[in-house]
Length: 118
Image (cartoon, rainbow, N blue to C red; front, side):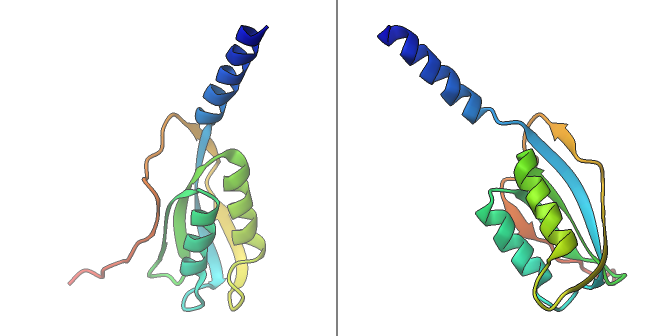
């Protein structure tokens, strides 16, 4: 009986380690630059173990990529669409289809900086 319990515990641990990873891209429109949206996206993603990146664009939007469990990616998508940072005014959010991936592309979450061509 002890042996069966140990096997079950091992299967549960293996399942927890091999959680399915999902990814999606996003672009947020409205008053979203200069209102700490990127910084708060980084903080929320880090707390929720979501990987990826966020950056300002030349057209006044904020865009990025999310990677994590489906639940955590969906939580970040909900926050980006409905909340954002306190000073942000989100007019709309566009997301690429959420899809399953085999392995993470990013090692963490970061803010990317756009450098204008010289």
